[in-house]
Image (cartoon, rainbow, N blue to C red; front, side, top):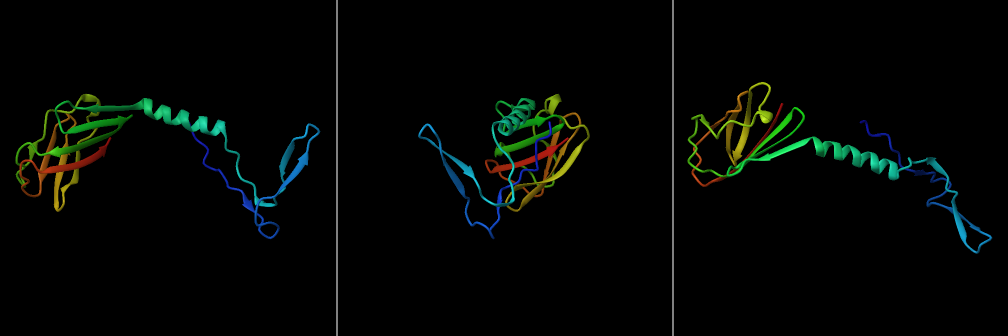
Length: 162
C-alpha cells in the first residue's frame, strides 16, 4: 500500500493578505456561515478521515506483520518484519567476558530469526569497549569483545540483519 506523500500547505498571498480572511453570510434561520476568501499563492491539500484511515490501515498491517520474541530467562529479545530481523541484548553480564576470545552467547536463535547469510558486525558493548558479533545461519551467536568485561557489568547492543 503506497501512502500519499505529496501533501501541501496553504501559502497565503502576502501581497494581498497577511492573515486568512473570511466572509460572513447571514442565513435565513438566524445563523451565520463563513466562507474563506483568502488569497493563496498555493492551496493546501485536503487532509481528513480518509487520509487518517489510510495511515492507520498501513500501521495496522505493519503491526500485524511484526513478530516479537523475548526469550524467557535471557537478556535478549528478537523481532522481525518479513525478512528484516532485529537482535537486542541488554543486561548484566552473567560471567566474565574475556577480551579477544570468541565465545557462544546462548543457545541457537529460533529458526524464524536466523539470518539468510552469516552476519559479522562490530558492536559497541559499553563505553570504549567494542566487539565483533557473528550470527551463523544456524542461529549461533558468537561474540569477540575487544577487552575483558567483568561479571555483572551492564551492556547493551543491537544488530539489524536479513
